[in-house]
Image 1: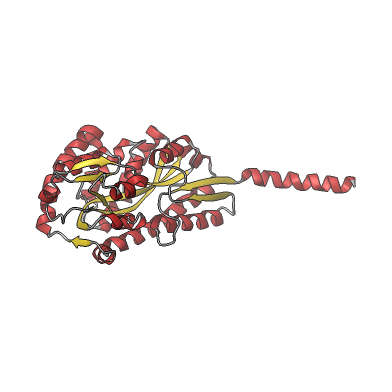
Image 2: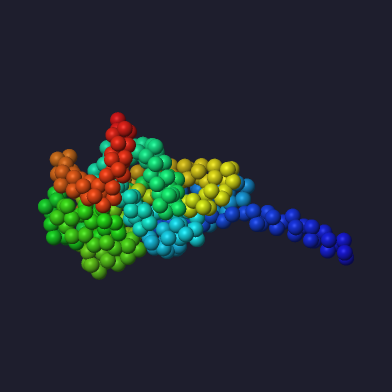
Amino acid sequence: MRLRTAALFAALALALPLAHAQKVLKYAHFQPAKADQPKHAAALAFKEHVEKATNGSVKVEIFPAGQFGKDQPTMEGLRLGTLELAVAHDGAIATVHKPIGVLGIPFLYDNHEHAWRVYDSAWLKGFSDDMVKKSGIRMLGVADNGVRHFTNSLRPIQSPADMKGMKIRIQPSPVFKALVESLGASASAIPWAELPTALQQKVVDGQENGVTNIIAASLHQHQKYATLDGHVWSVHAYMVNDRFYQGLSAAERKAVDEGVAKAKDIHRRMTAEQDRNAKSILEGLGMQVYVPTAAQVGEFRRLAQPPVRQWAEAEIGKAYVDDLFKAIEATRK
């Protein structure tokens, strides 16, 4: 009996350090838990890679569809360390780090590949280092939240003049307020989770988002018209609580970095595919889609970019704006 008891205690003593050594990484995002959703497909790939590469020393728990909370609670959880990793859009990030607003300046990039070259350049490290100092959150990578377009329930938008008097929903970010108002519409900040209801109840006439998000929230059910002006290349950033990240072993940090790289590539590829087929996808959902001419896009740019850039320089900081535009020019082909 004593021998069996001693053996039991010995087995427990061996098992306890292993259990204690396992780290749980809670991973939150806002898209539905479906394989056709870029954020969730990316999350599943991250989980598979990290758990395998760390031999189970890091366990990944995924919280899709805003289960961890809306924009601000998710970002606060990430800042405080009650959440280890989140993939969030720029509007949510702005609640804890305002400089992300520079990415809302309209008409920045030539195409998807150009945007990715900027996000994979030294610009990201500089921005992330600043974010860590000011919020305790480290940005590990940037993927696509879709090229943003205007939709509405009133009339086709073929020029900025058509937006006059419209009430347009924006994500809670002052830079998007400046963008929409520069085009003659009024802006209403409404959290993502409340947007479908706001459109259904006609609290606002329209909104601006990429195809991925229009599909994810079934926004087409309440919006008749879409204009593919591509005003902003919106982002989803992969962010980690820095205390948790620094507490990982070197091998575990490597696994997380590799997992983010894999997830980011899947996320980008899936979202970009939807962006490139936006017209056929939205028409297939019953929307009337207008594709502006180059001259018409130029008119949107002429009205929107200078005032939004000026606003960003004044409210966020000229250095942040200059750093981004330097990276844009350095990566332009």
